[in-house]
Length: 438
Image (cartoon, rainbow, N blue to C red; front, top):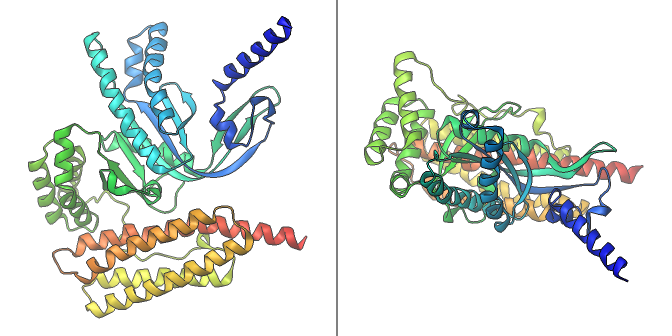
C-alpha cells in the first residue's frame, strides 16, 4: 500500500516537474489533460498576442560578470517577470538567454497590461539593484497579435511546445524597433486593432515602417503608461500635436512638422521620439532624404496577394480599395467637400454589405474564427463612424492630421484585414470546398 502511494506521489511530482518545461495552460490550449497525452505533431490554430522582451545592453552587462554571476543575474530578473506574466493570463513560451517570449490567448489587453506591469515590477527590482551597488536594468518590449499555430515540434527524441507563424516573427521585429525609437514598449497595428479597451491605455502613433518579410508598410504605436510621471503627462498633453506633427512629416510638410515637434519638446524635453523626428526634419532640410515608407502619397494597389478566391468578394475588395483611393485623393488635393462626402457615403453602405456577405460565407462554411471576424468588422465600423464627422469638418488646419487618421484607421485596416483575416478565410473555404468535392 505504501509502495503504491509513493509511486503515485512520485508520478505527480514528475508531472509537476515536466509542467515547469511545458506549462499546463499550453496543454489546455492543445486540449490535453496531462503532459503524458501530448503526441508529436499535436497542433491547433489560434488567435493570440505575442510578447517579446529583452534586456537592453545585456551583452555589455554579462561581459563584466562571471558565468555564475550571469546565471544568478538572469534567474533573479526572470523570477521577477514570471509571476507578472502569469497574473495577466500569459504563458511563457520560452526564455532565449535574456529574452522572454510569452503568449496571451485571451486578449490583447492582457498583453499590454502585462507589459506595463513588467515595467512597473522592473522599477522595484532596480531599486533593489541600486541599493546593492548594481546598475539598473532596462528592457524593451514588443507586441503583435494574429493567428498562429500552437503545437509540438522536434524529433522522436526531443520535442517542445511552441507557436509558429508570421505573427510571431513580426512581434520579434516590433521589439527590435523599440531600440530604434528609444522607447520601452511598442505594439503593432494588429495589436492596436485587437484592443477591446484602447481608451484605458496611453497610446500614440509612432511611425510607419518597412519590416523584413512584409510587402505592406507596418504602423507601430508607442504605449507610454509606465513612463516616469512627468514624461507620461507630457506625452499625454502633447499627443494630438505630436501625431499631427508626424502627419506633416510623413506628407513632407517639413517646416510645419518641425515647428510642432519643437513645441512638443518645449512641453516635454525628455520625449525621445519627438527629438528623433525633429532630427529627421533637420536631416531632410540638409540632405533632402526623407526617412519614411514613402507610400502615403500613393494609391493602394490591388495585387494577387489580396485575392480571396471568391469572385464576388474579390470584386468587392477592389471596389473598396478604389473608393479608399478616391477619398484619400480628395482629401490630399483639397477637392470639393461633395467629393469627400460621396466617397464616405459609398464606403458607409458598401462596407456594411461587404461584411454581411463575408459573414454569410463564414456561417455557411462553419469558419472557426467567425466571432473574431465579426468583432473586427464591428471595430472597423466604430473607427469609421468616429472619423466621419471629423472628415466632414475638414479644413486646411487639420487636413494632414485627418489624412493620416484615414490612412491608419480606414485604409490600413482594410488592407491588413484583407491580407490577413480575409485571405485566411478564403483559403479555409477553398480547402473545405475541395474536401467536400472529393
